[in-house]
Length: 208
Length: 163
Image (tube, rainbow over all chains, first blue to last red):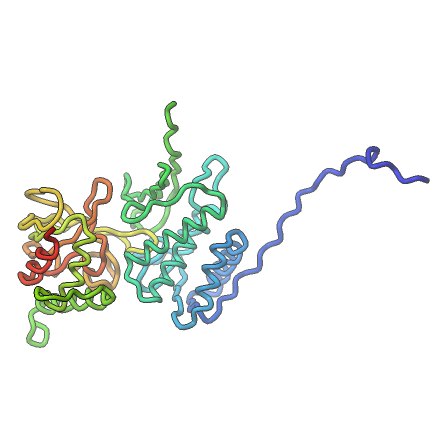
């Protein structure tokens, strides 16, 4: 029997193949990570996933991992006193806060912040501290790295440079300010150290 | 007293030492009017600042609930402006939001986030460096955003800022 012509063949319906789960990151000599086994596993999975999403993030992590002369210290935990997302001194990082951000920007908020953006900032800033930088300089460098991550993800706006990156909002919230007018308001609990919600404010539409 | 040294004197040495350590890459000035060895660092900060003044602390605002990190933490300080070295012609009181960074020269020792209660005590006279941030004045330097008043240092900074 002759083979069926291509025109006669029904076109197979493409089935979405889920992308393979990226391998967890394996910290090397450039990192000194403390915390529970569960938190370390969460952190390594998060870093591995973001390395697969962003070339600049991957390069940042690999650079830190190779810098055994200046090990970057991270003390993983959840809801630590006096820590909101992370602390420059002591390297404490609140995974619960980081996990409040989505891995991908919501469809209706293309400029929204993500876990990866915040992770890029935390890792970059911690590495700058390991290199001996004071906070102000380290924070500015970290904003550059998080903006590179955003651009890798196709986001066209950038977090404003310090000290215009964050301002206090209503009700004890903090507001991240972007160069296109997008603002992300992060609510805090009564203690002021845990994220209670995220409100995304799109930039004003230009009037014709 | 700390080993025969007043708390304030110890603070002065600590802060200036920290400035020198952090900013030791700043080019040193040379010439007949070379300021004292510790001033070039502050001169660099002054030149990069939008507002430089000698002020007396009137009050400290509420401390933040967290230390600076991914999100900068600030504590407001209200000053009586005594001597303006650089910036717009401000008068009376000025509010500067200072960074609160754990372990820094301007922070309170310990685990509770706050500016140094000794350095920023009401009545303290400080040389303050601030940056304009939208509608705010921000002390965007966790090491040397403010330093205890020293007449010689102020004179050197003023001289360096002259056009």
